[in-house]
Length: 318
Image 1 (cartoon, one colour):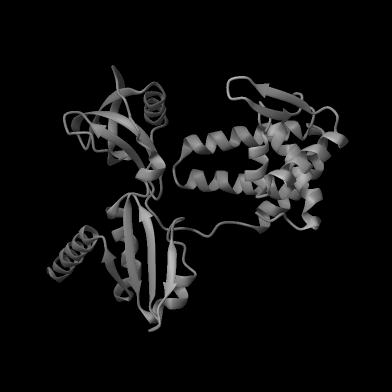
Image 2 (cartoon, helix red, strand yellow):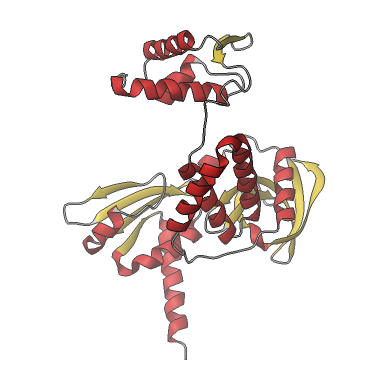
């Protein structure tokens, strides 16, 4: 593992100070190695340099794990850390975006976060507010056309409580009674509740959250076993082939965090990524028209062909 160039060291030491303060128990040498992509020896030097400059750093040993941690007393760095107008503007814009998408709970949470940051920056508020106002007037998001489904905040709170307590929920879904074990939530153009329906096996399924109503907790617990939401969201291996005429657009398009692209000799582009549901992928494929072909999985290709055929039949009706 190679060490970083020397010019980055001062910035890394400051970042290490902030990292130590951000964690209640402090950080281990392994944490430093992972965060800064450095060797163990370099991590030790960074720690020692910081301890030499700031003697207030405390060493804490976890007797259960036998690991040693280093960190600061509470609030030691409050006067060192400050927030820039750009950072606040980014949060304000993100709050506006969450509101536009109908995620009222996330909008309120961001608003609370912004208020806490402002409370910690009281001395600099007049100057901060002036710069923030200019940034808010000169930067913005383009209007994005996408479905907007209002999610009832009480419904969302019930689901979250159920997940925290590992309790099942009873609700109406598309007007039908269902009892579910809620495993997690996935946010995209829509909000999906991942859960297992009672008496229908143990396979988790994606449910549209906005289609639930009359939801309530029931006094029945469940065990998720080794279910992992991140793995579930990447369970489908998708492989697409794009025409050479669409190459420039494809190479500059963000499909998924797991995407891998390959430019072929004939000018076409192969794109691979992992996803959780085939239905959402099909709607995204529409924008590419005849420039895209589904190579895998077979189930996605079959469903997409059926969707295209049904769309054609509908358009031909008088």
